[in-house]
Length: 281
Image 1 (tube, helix red, strand yellow):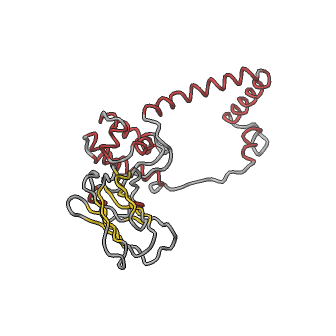
Image 2 (image 1 turned 45 degrees about the horizontal axis):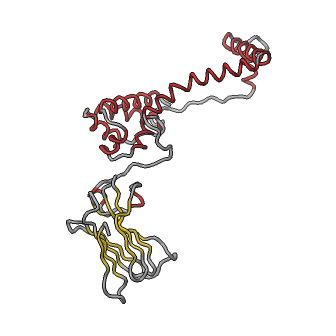
């Protein structure tokens, strides 16, 4: 890990402690999931700029200095700020270090020390295998215990790559719910239409937005979702569905809560009428 990245992670942890918020509270305050914060604070995933800005606001500190750290870390992490240099490694170099130089002379002091240490370790393992094994286990425990304590103090969220929401309320209007990382939707209302089409009103608490998910039985229908203030989004299905039972969703609509969300379903032009229901039905 680049030094600039370690410096950024330390600063983010300091800001989290300064905010006096738990990971759950921090997730609610910033609209970024608890598991995402756990990954950012434990350097499992590089934090996006908007997450750093949100943490600054939660800790009530100026963004400028922290964003400067973020830019340095981002440059180091993506290697935009460094010139890559490398030297070719030959397999015979390992032999030169342990058994002497290429010209037959004794190795340098560092190589000699490594060689002597390896020989001593080999002799110890051969003469006292059980004691050596026990010592290695104790050493591993001593090395891993602090890391386990630090990890536990910042939560044990999933290591799966979960994207934070990229929109909330009005900024979600007209977006496809499948591409906004609103990964916590709940069904707040459902109904099966007279023609067998399944309709569900979905709501994402983190994105504070809703939409309709439908499992149609035929093409050529229309679905509308409206909010309490009369805002609406609609979708018109194609004449024929490419795959039987394909899921169809409307675009998103701002909804701080489920109350007032309404779905209306129009079967098709040759089947006049509509079926409507509200969230909670």
